[in-house]
Image (tube, rainbow, N blue to C red):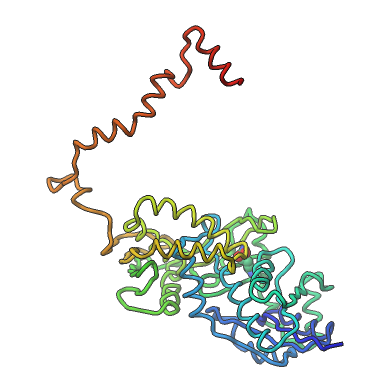
Length: 418
Ligand code: ARG
């Protein structure tokens, strides 16, 4: 039998560590691990050493931060994509990129399969596998968590200890945490009870509002064609800008979310999110659009935002629909230039100023002072014609009902019944 060669999406946590060993044993496989740096700070320390120790033949750790920001995060931001109007989708956006990195290594190394550590009841398995299906349909996908014998974390830990896999860190946290530069997702443990608020130790990168400074912090974000390009007047690349803003907003308790959400697999789940930079940037971007987008485009784009968010959440990143929507969205962003100033204070974000060279806000038209140039008289004719259909309707149907003149009800009924 040909020896299997498997590329494993590896985080260094308990599940993916056990996967490395388990696949090796079950398939007599050669294992290559692939870890993506999406700006998660804690997890990456010591990953290569750990992977080798666990039995990997070759280890890849790839810095995907710039690609993540420019090709994934900014697209979602420009689209205004928030799942169920709330969640900025750090995890959902990260998965297709991790899958892409995994596939690239698998093809280069001539692997027979790829494997991931997603559970059988989550969204991430769908995102991984739909991405692999699009990018390398010939690759086999293995999802050990859907088929292995372990029934609990304890059993996995026991297996890990028996096989000399280092697990110390994974044992400590009672939560399942997924983290990258666009946000942190926290679930499991006590958080499964939706009647109680998350305990303080669930939060990883934001302080509690009560502990936030008593004075507000002001930030100014500048955008070019819908993309953030500077923070507080300082030009920065996307990675640096998001990093910095995460620190500033997180220190002001901004970006905490507590959400019951609809998973693709039909389950409702409760998850806690921390997305300081994403929260500020979505608010700032939306505000700039309010000032610069034509009304019809703005209203139409809001419908697209909903579809775009569903598409990301549901793992359909590598699809012709997403590419087509991106072209539409990019076309709308040509005039989304300018700056938004925000006040961050104890978990709250308030827009306190906006300015744009493409501003459609015309003071001569909006003002109630003598500077006003709006043609008030033109409104009369406009309203007459605008309200003509409604006037006609109520002339015919007094108070919204058919007139009680003899015979008419009868006739209407006949028409309806026909
Ligand atoms: N519910 C989120 C999503 O589907 C996050 C999933 C991962 N969460 C976690 N705590 N490991 O995008």
